[in-house]
Length: 113
Length: 111
Image (cartoon, rainbow over all chains, first blue to last red; front, side, top):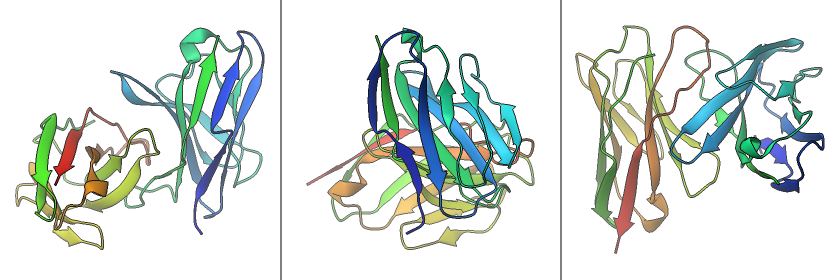
């Protein structure tokens, strides 16, 4: 089944403790992206990657890192999480052109205390 | 990015057609109209997209006006499971795959 898989689904951590949220897609998509969703602010793009070893900042990149060493994986790294990064995170992938839908994972709910 | 305007909420009786409108009066000639929905806090689900012509798939139909300044998503026979927030998005010509989500329409399907 074609899908975008994120792990974990839920994560509770403390301020400053490094964490990684994994994202994997099995559709051979070139494009991958991370979004966060917050009440009243909607979905905002954090980082995106047009292909392996090519990443770029989205609208809200501060406090996040990403890497794209393989086509299928696009982990989101929080080196020193803070409470304002408590949010619902979504990974997405697509073939990378305007005529190709973006497919989203089921989300990771992160709480930083 | 072309801005979209959607009503904040709509109701629909189960079994009836749900018609969700969207205005995108500043859309450019080569920008696509996409529709997604989000059920509770699940990941946004792709529904349909189009450029100029009307489109239909197993989930819905998309009607785009001739001047492309507005569109309507049609769920032909709404069920309770179609209760969700529906987002109309105009996909930019710049960063190829970025989607800018607005506030959407909360569709409530009732018995």
